[in-house]
Every structure is written in C-alpha cells, then in structure tokens.
Amino acid sequence: MLSPEDYVEACRRYKNMKGNGHERQRSHALILVTQGYSYRETAKILLVDEETVSRWVRLSQTSGLDGLKNHPQWGGEHGQSPLSEQDVKRLKEILQTEAMPGTVVGSGWTVRAIRDLIQERFGVAYSRSGVRKLLDKMDWSYQRGRKLSIQRRVEEQERFEAETAQILEAVAHRGARVTPLAGDQSQGYLEGTIARRWNPRGHQPLIADGARSKQAENIYGAVHLGTGEEVAPFVIDWQDSDATIQWLEMVLDAYPRGDILLWLDQAPHHTSEEVEDWVEQHPRLQVIYFPAYTPEENPKEPTWKALKEDVSHHRWHATLADLSNAIDGDSQQAQQHVVNFLEKLGYCWSKGRISPLPQTG
Image (cartoon, rainbow, N blue to C red; front, side, top):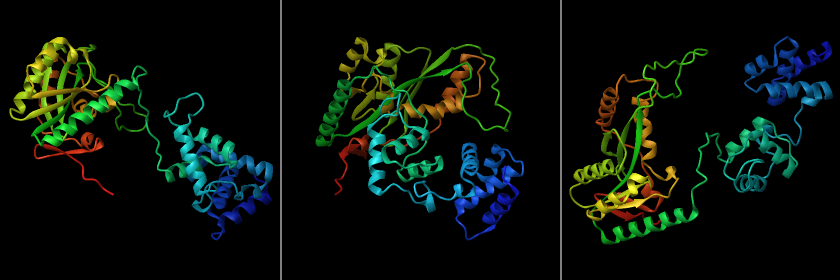
C-alpha cells in the first residue's frame, strides 16, 4: 500500500496533534490499510463507511499523501459548508419542489442523489458524511416511507377540509358542549404478525406460530380528540352495517349528554344506507367523513400500534376466543394518546367545548 517513506510520513502526520483532524484521520486510514486491515475493518475502527476508506486510498494512489489534504470545495471542513446560507436555502427549496430521478415530488432523496445534485447545480463536491451534516443543518432526517394511494382525489380532500372547518366554526360559535372523536376499525389476527425485535446479533427472532390461519377478530374504537383517551372499544367477528350501528350505539352510551362529532373513514360499512338512516335518527351524533384513501388523516389509525404490539406481534393464539380475550384485556387498560388533530385545524377542546386557538403574533 504505502511505500516505506510514505508510511513514515503518514505516521508523522497522524501523530501531529496540531494537524487538521480530518487529514489526520485519512492518514490513520492509510496506516491501518498498509498494516493489513481490510477496508471494512478500517472503516469500523474509524467510524466511517467502507466507500470513504476506498476513496481515500484511491486519492493517495493518484495524488500521493498530499491528495488527502482538505480541498477548498470539500464539505465538512471544520464543520463548515462550502455552500453559502443562500445556497443552502436554494438547495432545500430544490429538494422540496423537485423529485429525485425516477420518483415523484415528496418521495424523498438518497444521499448519492443529493451529492450528484449539489455537484451539478452548485459545482461543489461533497462526501457522504458532508451531505449528512448538511441535511442535519437543514433539519432533515432519514425516515421510513409510507405508501399513499393513487386513488385519492383533490376534490375529496377539499370537501373534507371545507366541511370540517365549517362544522368546527359553527360549534365554537354556539359554545355548545361537544365531544370530538375519531373512529376506526382494525383487525387482530389469529396468526402471529411480524415486527422488529431486539435479539442477539446473528440470531433472528423466531415466532411460535401454531395457528396457520388468517382468521381475525375485528375491533372498533375511537380516540377522544381533546383528551386522547380510548373510547368505546368493541370486538366482533365481522365488519358490516349492523356491527357499525352496534358500535355507534356504544359511542352514544359512552356520552349520554351533549353533541358528538365523529370523524370516520369512508368504508362501505360506514356509508351504507342503513348506517346513514340510523345517523339521521340520532341528531346528537354528527359524522364527518375523511377523504377516501387517506388513512394518514385519521388520528385513530396510529393508536392501533400499541394494541397490535401487545396482542398480535410475535405471538399466536390457539383459538379466536383466546385472541378475543387478549384484545378485551388490552382494551380495558386505561390508555391515552397524544392527539393534535384539532390543533392542526386551529381549534382546541377544553371542558366540553371547542374553541379557536388564541392568535399569536
């Protein structure tokens, strides 16, 4: 790898505590590779990626040890970025309004694609770590994607927003006592579902699964949009109009006084003629439907995670009765969730009433 002369010089540069920290790290990498460590081992020791070690080796082979000195256009020099504040602002705008090649706007970016974009648009070469530092400065994070249905429609979203705004404004203006809820259904499967678990490295978690059946229990429930409390949990063998009406009766029983606002998705068993007729006969309950194919709008959706973690993930139940008992037991526990649905719309709930949020600035 390094010649004897370059090895001595690399050691000198590495031991020079007054030298640039990035350059010392690169010299250290070449020393380790020359000593017989693999790129992967070297990367692990220096807490960098294997590609970075490989790039440093190539630079030394083409330009000698001086090729490892910081270049004016490299990112990360002393924690600084070669992009100006205006450039960073422009980059953020590009990343939010344009799409990575082969994707659509909003699908996210890879570090490699951002590196290529910076090189193309700004003429600046960034390392992977430099890009990550830049993204951190921009308040971006590495996140798991979520699928969105292509069947969603803009006019449906507009209908939902206008209807919700109108209802909240009217309720707040009247000062009437009201209970705001978001409802949803889920399923708990007899066969254990798979989730992430901590386990010794090299020993993949194994799930005991004796059911071998996709049978499931159907769970109705709601979350209070003011307190975050679970409301009217209901387990049944099916989801249809009759089951929905039974559950709506439970919701009314849970709050025998005052009006109830209930946001629901547009599942067929929520919008059938039977359910609509029942709702018309119970004016104390007003139902607002979320846009079709937009589960992320419903604040009840994320609350199923805790139940499935306790009841379904990495466990199986011998019978549906066992599954039902496990769901009932979990539902009986007092659970509370953080819900900001009303706040996002400019309202808050307190002591039974909905009010506009105070104006700031």
